[in-house]
Amino acid sequence: MIHQYKLNGYNIVLDVCSGSVHAVDELTYDMVALFEGRDRASALAAVREKHPGAADAELDEVYDALLSLKDAGKLFAPDTFAPMAGRLKEKSAGVVKALCLHVAHTCNLNCAYCFASQGRYRGERAVMSLDVGKRALDFLVERSGTRRNLEVDFFGGEPLMNWAVVKELVRYAREREKETGKRFRFTLTTNGMLIDDDVIDFANREMHNVVLSLDGRREVHDRWRVDYAGNGSWERIVPKFQKLVAARGGRNYYMRGTFTHNNPDFLKDIETMLDLGFTELSMEPVVAAPDDPIALTADDLPVVMAQYEALAKLMLAREKEGRPFTFYHYMIDLTGGPCIYKRVSGCGSGTEYMAVTPWGDLYPCHQFVGEEAFKLGDVWNGVTNAAVQEEFAACNVYAKPACRDCWARLYCSGGCAANAWHAAGSVAGVYETGCALFKKRMECAIMMAVARQVEA
Image (cartoon, rainbow, N blue to C red; front, side, top):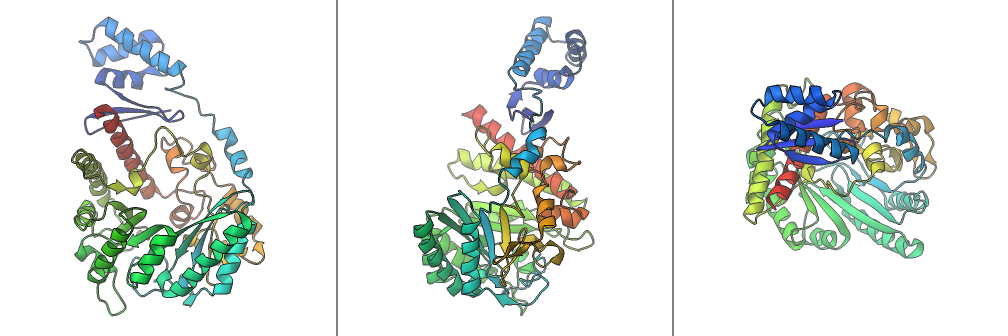
């Protein structure tokens, strides 16, 4: 399968199943489109109609080059992954490698677009006890099989509202490391309101990554990210974020923003973050019901697509100027990973990755918490809802009919199960708006990789 597109002056040909990327001239670009399913004579005749000035020798040379690439498995490579999709996931059955600990089902902000109902997840406000947290870490160790590296996200609500327990859980995990030979990596996600010197010192010492919630421009951020008195939080959190990032040496963090129908021109928000000194950035499209006023509309999509292209060009320009920055969704390795297991199986929600509520209940991921039908079990008894886990275990990119013929399938791995469920009523469905945005991001990311190679 081939995907062809033009962006930023490059003619790009992606061979989907081999992962090979080719930057080509116009004649070759058109030859690729007319190559498959034709014999040599008809392919050359079709290309000659589009390029009447091309010499026969040039056409023959291009055709032979494409034929050599095909023989080498770098063009029109067959899909050998579909038959192994189910077997790949079976190999890791029963092994858990990561937990999202909901240490606080409460929040000190009242964000209108919060998928977690302002941290309550449609339930009661609560914080995780130390005993429940310890049991969750023990559960992870017990179910991790031979895996050495384990991951734990401290999440909410706002996890800093239960900071003392977070610190004790990290200390407990370090003790368990000595006993078991396992290695924990921690991530903290925070809105920043309660950041102080203690948080900065401890997080910079113990947290492998810190995710900081900021929507960019002050007027955009303060429209939604308000406290319970209706006051915006931008002015209070930005200096704290700057201090934390400076103390981390500008590494291992992400500014995580959300854009909505009200700011599809999100590049301005990214530029604001850059002006504030932040260089590790992520902007996520809001996921909301179609009738929600903040949901992205069909009219927003062309604006957003153009923003993604402009963002890619800005990143390339700043790299040349010696002022690079990272955009999470444009991080792509065309020569190494991810491995085929990850490409086919996705994030591992419900199988390798689970969320833990303050009461110790297990859910497939943080976006399913509060949906009782998706409750898997608890940290004491493990997974008792085998039917739901089997549904997630069977969920891979080839199990989704809409994904089988998509050129981006080995990059998105089938997309987010939660978004699919909310949009289509099934974890095997697709979130069409999310798919469209993802494909544009991948085109931009691949173009940037091509530009770096061509200009190197």
